[in-house]
Amino acid sequence: MTKHYSVTRTIDASPDTVWGLLTDVASYARWNPTVIAITGPIAAGETIKLVSTVSPKRAFKLKVTSVEPPEKMVWSDGMPFGLFKGERTFQLGTDGDGGTRFSMTEVFSGPLSGLISKSIPDLTDSFNQFADGLKAAAESC
Image (cartoon, rainbow, N blue to C red; front, top):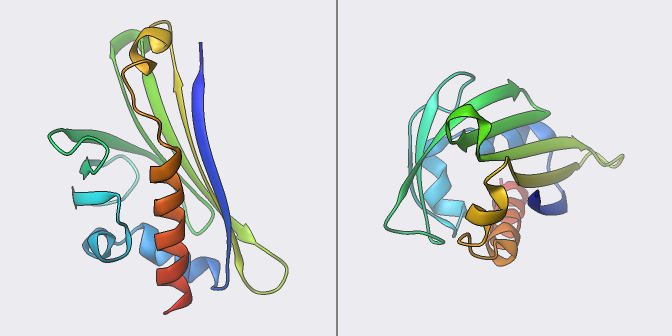
């Protein structure tokens, strides 16, 4: 069983500006109300630690599995042997007017995803807050 969340926004800023915010660990707490703390370099092959408002007592260790500036980035976490996997994909494209079409999707998959996904809170509000914070920050740059 697969479970997913997604959000899309049109942002009146260039993809480079939006990408800069998405990859700047130091700025996350300023624009992202869903992040309590984030550490580590956001670069392909690196591991970052993220503490979110959804689960403030837990630090998620996420592998940055793909970075294709300024278009796509993927963070993932999971259990051995693919029993459970969470994968968050950030995608940016132009909107035709010099702005950016931003989307973020998280997919939970694997044989244990049905069982584990039941304990994951609804991320819809968190996704909207993330996208709205990113939009506001990018448009004020």
